[in-house]
Length: 128
Image 1 (cartoon, rainbow, N blue to C red):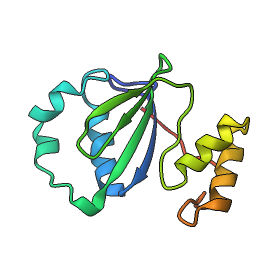
Image 2 (tube, rainbow, N blue to C red; image 1 turned 120 degrees about the vertical axis):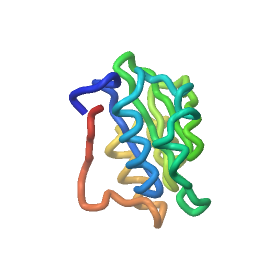
Image 3 (tube, one colour; image 1 turned 90 degrees about the vertical axis):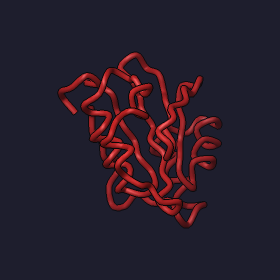
């Protein structure tokens, strides 16, 4: 996204699209990378996220921090330079650890994991 308090953050999602959309709407309009207010926010608490709607959000902040957010909207900073999530995430991480680029790692994960897919596009980016 090009506006709001979290301008410049790159967001990656995996899992149920509905909760991912809810998170992105909330994150777009709230204090810069501040998750403490989420528990008081009716926009989040008013929505029931079911067990089968699991998801992960990966945030790359303008200061190059990687943060993971789970279905409970609990952020965790990842102390590495790259990360991957989803069913093929560990395969992709192993490929990148061995020197593959992110795109090569995705190709390898697609080859090795039935549930990993490019879904017909190389990369879809939404900037907050």
